[in-house]
Length: 433
Image (cartoon, rainbow, N blue to C red; front, top):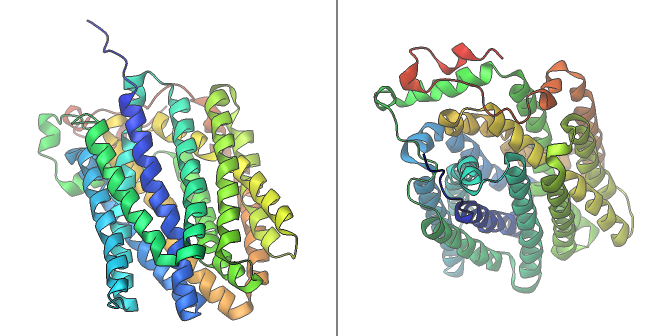
């Protein structure tokens, strides 16, 4: 049988679509909190708007895993990017027409979040097949994903901060809308039809939505390492959300540095994270995952909280963000490779949806809790407590024994879990290793 011809176009298409959609997200992450905080002067309301985006993101993403597996991730990605672009454009147009009360803004932000969730999931789900078509090692593919995310984290905040400073916050949303629209165009043009969509067997065609949904839970219950990752990353995500959605914007306002320095910090962090991700992509197959993962996590998180709680020159602050970014560049390549190795392909959409959504469940609360905490006790104490909590989480959690699995099964591919038409049981019935 002739081996399929190597094609790098799907991998390039997935990465390009991720880049532009993530850039749109990072731009709006600067513009929307700054717009709400400068308009209302309320850290609590800033947190409410952040909650309005991230709660639908997490909920809808969790529920659409079976749909992505059935309808195909290419179609889901294209539709969701179109919806996100339309909602972002509507915010700009309604504000220009003086028809954007806070309630309408919250509703449109919720639409953006609800569309982003399954859109991001769909792109992630196509990565293993794109890597296979291009004959790219899985760890290298996840490293390139990390580079893509970090590039967006570099370009997006810098562009967003500059646009906010020069033209106002909602001008940045024009860029977000354009990027979302460009992402849908890339998916339609660069990815072959049926990308990531496995033709269902007769048994799978008869399965209902909730049975498919339950298979994802059944699989996760038998994966202690994935559950440990979800818990740890879930807590650090909550702290990161509080930082980006409330603590950093409030710091920019109260310190007098403004959105330009806020964007500079994020961009420098993103730029050095690109370097970290590139290094991870080149040497990931030779790294011992566990020590690299926990050292990188400890360097990537706590320092950025602690440095904003002190009065230091801008150059020193930017230097700390640079170190945080470089260390953070090693995290997603490791996490992505572990997930793709351990989850069977036919369960990838529903398991990834649940895994990501559970890990992101604290993000909607991050803005709310951050805003309430700053209102109650002030910015500096919240930054200090958050940094210490982050450090304890990323150091003590690694003592649990399930983390030893990070290196033990690397490179073996996903476990042999049967497709639905091959088994009358659930996916969790055959998880012994």
